[in-house]
Image (cartoon, rainbow, N blue to C red):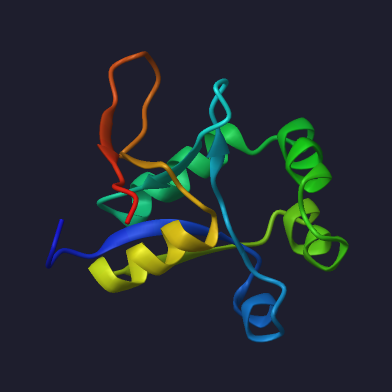
Length: 118
């Protein structure tokens, strides 16, 4: 994953990010770990968001989102963020990610990259 760009879902439109109201989308696993979904194409990221961002899911996400960031989330504004290795490391640190899930899909079989501490 060194030189390739991967896409992360950013909650909020470009104007939200410029105003400091953007957030990186992540998933909390049942064991409390944080997973950062990454995608090899913007289409894959968009397709995942469309399939998994119903009103109920956005309301649940809003519960753990600062008040200033809830508007973009509830209004379903997203930005697909193309990130290189350095940008991906910053996004993972921002959400305290324990691992990355590459091109997440339905089912138990997932490509996971566990992040080392230190």
